[in-house]
Amino acid sequence: MRLVIQRVSRAAVSIGGELRASIGRGLMVLVGVAEGDTREDALWLAAKTMAMRIFPDDEGVMNRSVTDIGGDLLAVSQFTLNASTRKGNRPSYIRAAGHDLAIPLYELYCAECARLRGGEPVKTGVFGADMQVELVNDGPVTIVIDSRLRE
Image (cartoon, rainbow, N blue to C red; front, side, top):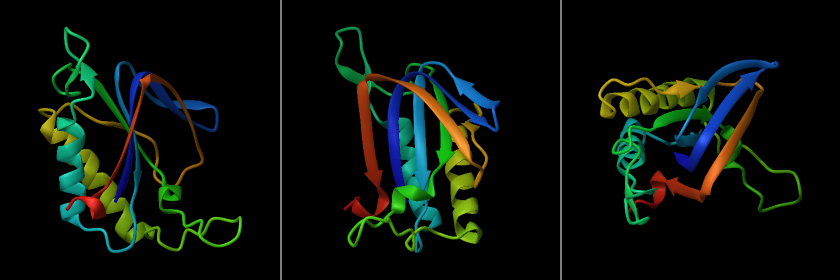
């Protein structure tokens, strides 16, 4: 699984011009599931997301997690994170997981983040929908994490 985590002052996702979800200060996370990803990948990434210290403390040092600041979390599925651009100019998405694997792992990631937040829900888009995402990247701070590169 691959995540793009962005520290935001606000973010929102809309579908067909209708607001689906919005957050204030917190994390906007794009979630890509690839063939071969497992339950352990989703759980590990959720723990990393919630513990990542990318919010400033009183001295301005990135030393606090989204949990520490009581921040919001918006997770949006994005199969294009698994694009291969090795050949030609049209990305290949052959490595992206199909719905039968991707939906349960995306939902597990969101559920585990919520559990680690003490039951505070994670806001989401709609898996497979054509979504419009807006955000104000604070910093900017953007972190990419791939569960296959954890060792």
